[in-house]
Image (cartoon, rainbow, N blue to C red; front, side, top):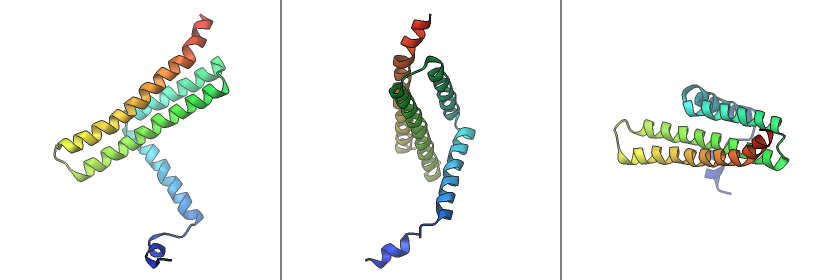
Length: 131
């Protein structure tokens, strides 16, 4: 076995997992505090979950809604990380920095658009039946 490999990898401990989990929560907390889109995502998620209970959506529809909520939120967190790294590496306006930020933001937009359309497909027919 390569000795270099042993030196660069830390031992598995409960403390490491706990710290990793706490760091993840810190990332979510940061995004909730400083990223306005994360608040919109959380509000949309809460409204979708409430609507799911009220309209008694199926198990498959629940899985779809929860998966899309998590994908949109995770993509927003990745977008935030990319923006932070770009801001850390340069303070100047650079076309590559703009491209990185724009593409990361576009990834969130793609998932959010699909989530919105899917929400309409799931919820709209159930709402129309009530009217």
